[in-house]
Amino acid sequence: MFSWIEVSESAIRHNLKQFKKYIGKDNLLMPVIKSNAYGHGFDLVAKICDSDKNVDRICVVNSDEALDLIKLKIKKPIVILSFYSDDKNELKKLINRGVVFPIYRIDQITLLNKVVKHLRKKIKVHIKIDTGTTRIGFLLNELPQIVRKMGESEWLNVEGMFSHFASSEEDPVYTRKQFATFTQASKVLKDYGFNPSLKHMACTAASLGFKFKDLNAMRLGLGLYGLYPDNKFIKNIKLKPALVWKTKIIQIKNLPPKTNIGYGCTFKTKSDIKLAVLPVGYWDGYGRSFSNIAQVIIKRRLCPVRGRVCMNLMMVEIPKNLKIKVGDVAILLGRTRNDVISAEHLAKLSNTINYEVVTKINPLLPRIKVK
Image (cartoon, rainbow, N blue to C red; front, side, top):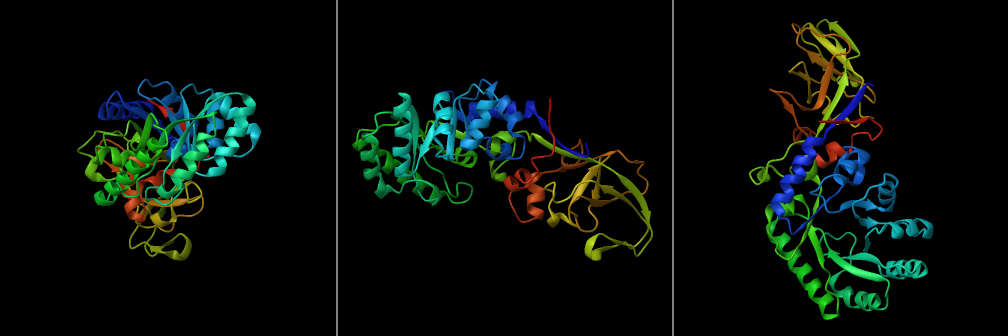
């Protein structure tokens, strides 16, 4: 095993406990484990959430992920947030399991109603409202047509309605405007005889930044993994990062001055240096954008990346006096007692967000559960 991810079960359980306390026991906590659990390992995180008393439901992005949860024999209720197959055999498996479906196109009402009518089994659905993120969801002026269609569908139980904030980390004015639209949508549904018992719109950022009393369920994404959508939220809640990315040194060499390192010869030594080669590259998800600017931790020392990150290899300079050997561990993302390389730090180096840093880690790398 050349490179692997360690995921702390205690950190994830800590974060779940903190958020359940934060939102209150009367509100549902629904962790989101889409996209390989934000890079942390789908199966691993699903099983932790399934056994945690603070978790009410588990959210996934699509029907493929919902079917994976069924294969894992997950017991918690499952909620699909976005898209799903129109394959009737797949739909039957999901319906028989009691999976909650989103409705954001009128043809989905017809499709689901036809399948569940054949099964003689009611299912729960949540109507998705586009309040201004402009992705999937019904616009406000489409709702009358939708709810009339829903009224013809005796097998679909409108348990919930939901939406998604576009800029809850940065723009409070737009966030409140979106919630006002959501409130209007709720009124339209009520006028047509629908009063969903579950209303959810808040992600990690919205939950930490706002208090919308009419929402009674929270979709916990980034915060589940101990990551903050913005540093300003650190004062609100204490989270523990769950992920550490490690690898092993595969070669050590001593280089003289004026030695070029890596593709494009983008780094040239100015003096004698000691170099370690690591079996990690951009195929693994360690971005080429980290070339010559990022660092790794080896034996509690920060060691700078030298030269361009390759597809499967990278090089780092190590202190000359550091006693080190092939097989010693290097930390690409994580912390020791004195040093930390955070997802936020790497995101800043590559002009992106911490979400992308962790989700881009290759899903084929082993994920190992640790305490």
